[in-house]
Image (cartoon, rainbow, N blue to C red; front, side, top):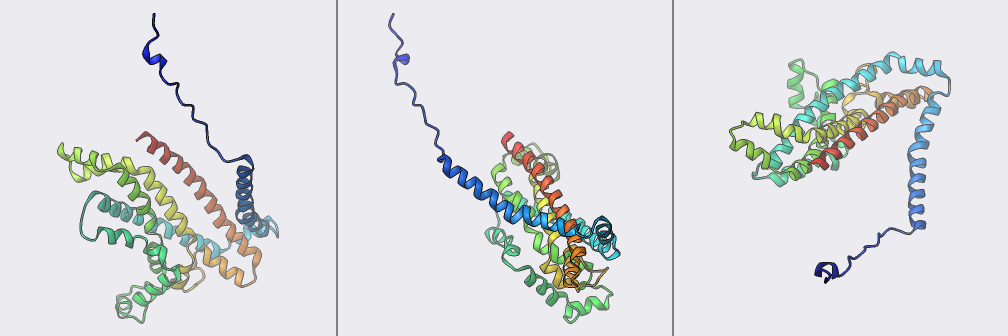
Length: 289
């Protein structure tokens, strides 16, 4: 019996796995580890070493000090306000940009990067020029009993400006990759806009939305430049955690400043852990789709 023609064909080509030479890989890994040790782990270790330099009692006293507690409260209040507002704006902007065509769409996408291009200090000065007590609008607000600059609303507004791109920038590529097929199919079946958003759009973007909110919250916690300009540095009233750390350090109260700074480090590490969990969920969801 003759052998089938298919079995006599050209043998399959075995592709050799291409990889960098071992010395190159070892060098790159070593450089990466040295970078992390020198610029991440060592500074973080020094922060905690300085924070506990005078012992646990001094550390607890520094973090329980009334001005520190007020700074933590103001920081968390700002984050609690800013993150939901930016989530709403980010979803709205991403939905408009990815689901509709309109004049100025490209310009809107470009404007989303404006806070990344403008220095936070300049952003703070802009709001002082717009809402300060010596401006026409600021004078009118003062007559109505509304104080923006050197108060909590000014801090919230400045933080909103520097953090608003994070959610939108996470959602736009995701929603562009998903396309509009599911929404259009639901629309042909008679679903309304809100139903489409709740049952189709939101489930598809939930991990990307959470990821963007985590990044937004982390940026809001550590914001210094814009908040420093609009806050007035009033202890117990308009000082966030970064501003309180700066004041303690400028007063040569180094141990207390590092103790309060360790709170920022703890919040940052918590953010990194949550971010990694959300990122894994996000990648798993992307693979499923």
